[in-house]
Image (cartoon, rainbow, N blue to C red; front, top):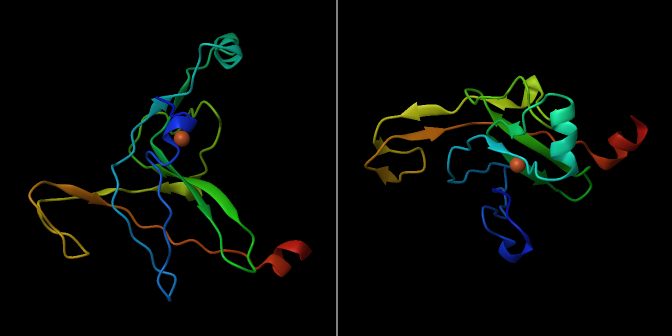
Length: 134
Ligand SMILES: [Fe+2]
């Protein structure tokens, strides 16, 4: 389901890294979903004999002063549709394993009474000057 402007921060968050650039957050393990296919996009997909599904993913926009803003996704490695994303967004470098753990103490010290997943991804932002000359 797509969320409209009436729910601007629903399923979204603004995060800051610590002084060493580390970050972590809690979320749900993303699952696949269909893009709206009741209009011209659906017509195009049907004409191309393509399904409307996107694999499970997280959208990210990373900003740091003096660096090029990075807008990207991370995709769940065991999600359906990784090889046929309706919008062709999947890159192997953006596919991440979500490791299942039994109930217990999570890396941040939180104690959970049910299984949970962890995923890790290190980003590298390109300095704006370096990006301008590339
Ligand atoms: Fe999405």
